[in-house]
Length: 349
Ligand SMILES: *Cc1c(COP(=O)(O)O)cnc(C)c1O
Image 1 (cartoon, helix red, strand yellow):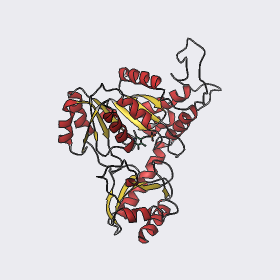
Image 2: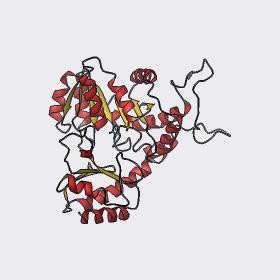
Image 3: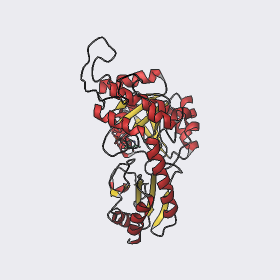
């Protein structure tokens, strides 16, 4: 079946008289013994419904986590002591902070690479235990040759992990490109309404799934049941929301490109995220995000409402990201309203 049908139908209770159409919220810390669940940290029917839907979309077996960072941290825990992790220099700041912290405590070593320089990344894979991808990167919106680099990583015996938060399984299926694991901040497009924190990992095979489930259960990085229910509800409309956000983004990219207030407009060719670099850097960028009424000045992304922020306001954002870069998360409002609000703010700079 096509992804839109999978998004709507996967993880539903069976069609039987008096069964609800949607998996209910099951609040339970423990279950009657000798079944498959036993205790609330090991499993929950509402998580299972979310996991079935995401796993079906990504083509693997999914595990729900309490946040994207819980998923990131649990996956990084796979590598042995002092092992090398190769990751994009422009990864999500939380991932960069986590890698730096683990490295500073002697837990692992990190090599940060320009993910667009395929030959350099392939060379860096030689001693790697784990190769981490973001593609598109956050917020530089660079794209990686996942398939080619995954081959090199596997030849070196490394795990291949793709953070698929930006692309979602509707625009990129990393397991089909050779990834062993896919990571999500379900907080973003999957849940999609700026009201829930959740994460997920999808494993390409049963053995890795079992290892990660064991890690999740022992770390206790498990989500609340209401969160899992909200994220599953979000998945039901993911394709509709993403199509609309993408259509809006395309219109805005066309109108923003060449605008005299902007030095550069970056767009990877799909999805709802645009990075615009203000001519004049930090100062006009900070003025822009304070001069709109519809666009909300807020971090995070992937919600139905349009938000934006200057990324370098965060200390952890690499210095190679331009000072004046504003990341726009395009929502599903009417694009003419979004443009009118942006246009007046840009004109006033
Ligand atoms: C937000 C984000 C994360 C972290 O997810 P949380 O749900 O905030 O913990 C990881 N990776 C990417 C690409 C993100 O955008």
